[in-house]
Length: 108
Image (cartoon, rainbow, N blue to C red; front, side, top):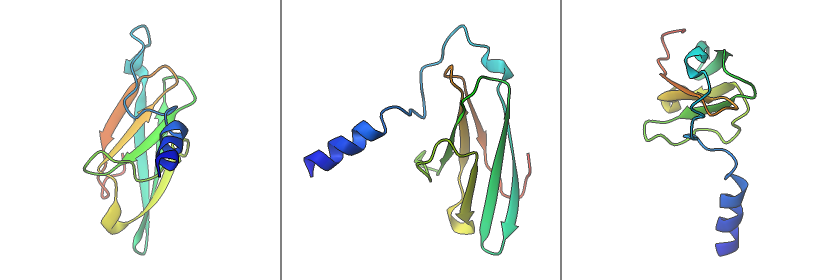
């Protein structure tokens, strides 16, 4: 059990949903938007990013700020209507962070 927990923590230490921001980075240029497509009981979410510096990391977060997926390099997410994200957070390579509220009925 201890080995499994240590492995899990070691595996995900390289990605931080709230990394320190480089004060010299121009974070104001990081823009995040998304579109949705509903297919039956599933909602597909596609995130678009402009500004900032690649690579980007994408966090689809529930109302308790927990990730809904562990693949932080994917800019899209598919979820059941009952398990949609509350927030979408994007972090660029310099630590600039942009968090937006998710609203299924709005394409932003």
